[in-house]
Length: 369
Image 1 (cartoon, helix red, strand yellow):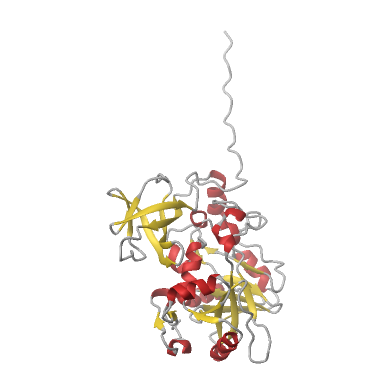
Image 2: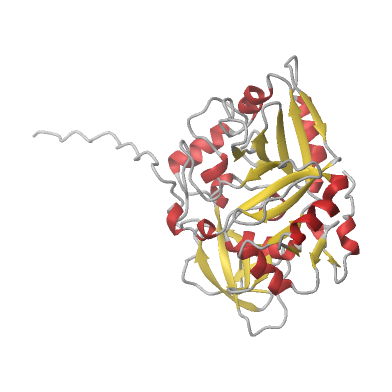
């Protein structure tokens, strides 16, 4: 899918983003203020580079239910969720945000993932009454859950996805702290689906009501501070959802069979996924920060790689990294020569809540002499 450059890139002060956020602004000249505005619910973020895939037809929800990790068979219109599409070995391939409006299931994903997601779904249609399409006429805008309410030109409220992170859904499990203790509980995201041609007008209307325009750097900073995994950053060819604490909001452990379910169940039952997501607090005295993909070292031993790096307006330079699960949580790591202290996201024990107790082995019979 070709990235469509946003018209908001022509705004004064706009600096284009790169990598998976190409096509929109990284910031508009004041990245720290934009972050603070977003945290306070005062900003709207141009995320029009994201991909939108639609699924229509009377079988759409039961069909998505059979393919994915999530229970969406009876998804109520307007209720937001997310799902994972896994390979046969349980590795994450697609991770769309999902909301249904009663006639259409809207799947929001990375720009580079939209074509692959649509192609996979199309290959699984068989004889079911569903239609799959990439919707290039619909764009995404982001706000916090307490942010401005957006309206289209006719005054209607757009279809909106409200991020369930980090609330552990019924039938799910968590590999990190309780919901109330999770930093993601302090900020929630919303994605608004608006006609692409109306993006400038919708943003101007929000600004007239007191909102400010913020860039993708602000959005990423809030995501990283919330420990929220992202397909384009935290997922590699080996990633399973347990390593990223992604079962909280994307996996229902009690639903029927789907591709990759065996791995999901086995790792949950036995515990100890091979890797774990961690936040790294980077030495702020360094002028430079590492790039995503840089090696994480414990002494001279390679133990993982950085996946996301941001400068947070309160936390300073921080990163998400995927490292070996058994790395000691109190050891100081280095990334590109920069010291990095760990903050646990996924526990070192690697056990989800409500994991079944291991079965006791057969008791040895005492031999009577």
